[in-house]
Length: 204
Length: 370
Image (cartoon, rainbow over all chains, first blue to last red; front, side, top):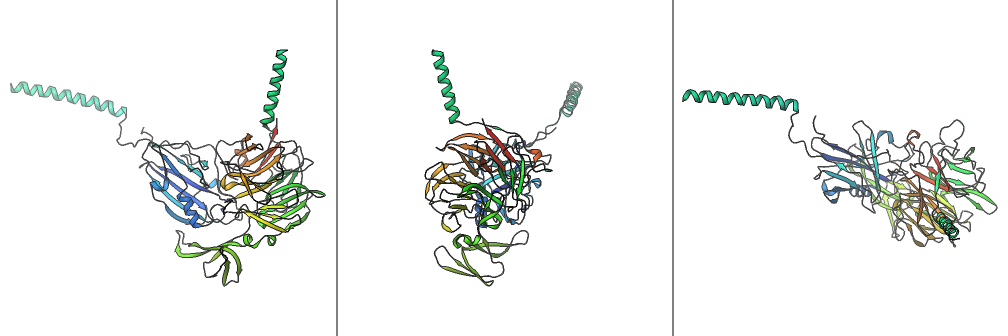
């Protein structure tokens, strides 16, 4: 009945997970808030068992440089579009799909997490990782059915496009409301005209 | 007569083409797991083939770190070796054929007979202190994160000279010493994380600290330290150099470095001098094996590729259309012939490709050369 607010990603066939002996890539959970069309990311990187990210400062740098947003013909570092809110966590929490949490590997993990939210300025965007960026990104989201879909982005890769349809600004009444209402208004209009003619005749 | 010549020419062209561009086809269900098991077991290791064609696969199982299969893929036996043989090779050395492996969790290297008897070890203590004892010291900032846990910040990195419980003494890069009081919240972390080794024609053993700082160590055949090169600094700028191999396609042999974090392959000479980058923009090269003039590469983000001696990719196998890099894909989601996370690889003696994956259930794929 109502137009779909968001036709979310066609992201992807295969679930992937994180870790490594290396959790040697960034995990980014994507969500789209329907009411205000805001796109949000929750990115996490391990800096204790990750040979590419030796400490918290490197983790913050890796997160800030993680993604590009391709929008309106441009590629903009995502952190330039909206601020990142950083926090440290000590587990995988909801940073990766529950079904893909790595097995206990005897390694300790310490994660830095960044939250980001932005309202797109174009009807379609995509995410990419800059060529030469060593930190790969596992971009994932939950479907309406609660299924995790993901895409793994290496430097130079771009995600499938994410469609952001126009906002549903006004309520469009359905036909079963429109037709009777139009008919009723027409009848009322005709009655009003006849009544006016009647009155005019009386005055003359 | 003309037709005959034409046919001959076509034949020669086809022969030339097939020689230049090898092709492979999947051998479905090649590996037969041990009796009573559906899969081989938790894999985060390597695969290798001995001169008789037997296949060795490492799995993360206590005192049963290597499974041995016949050339036909049938399970033969398990070797009582460590459970974290992340990288290993089978090489002829002197009077016999041996397995040389890096034991990741124990930061040591072993040389074992093919029946599993360990005949030599390079212990952690044999590695130079400059790399072995390199640590980063962090301390609590006084702030707490959202979970009330103290936030920390690195305060120094260097070679740990001593730690008496009251203070940590580091030797910094400029040679000076730094004494750090071991107050509450001060912690040092680091150490070797050895991921692979290989053997040069002269018997020297090359070991890489691929989950550490990506240094390559050279030891003599007897296990005596000789030299170190590589690491995160110029000119190498290695990052997560996952495995190194001795590339005997060249004379003299070279060191073939799977510099995974930089998504590239490069050569050094046997002394560690950079010779050049062979390939860039790979899908995270994790392991390699040689046969004739070819090298096959396991790319953990979803591809097996084959390259010629000139550095040209001539074939690929099992490419996953959606790049992967995970141990968490269960057997029900495996697609025939499509890789998940290639972690170890080997040619067999006939030039067929065997690949083992980073997978909790354990997976081996084989492609036969056409």
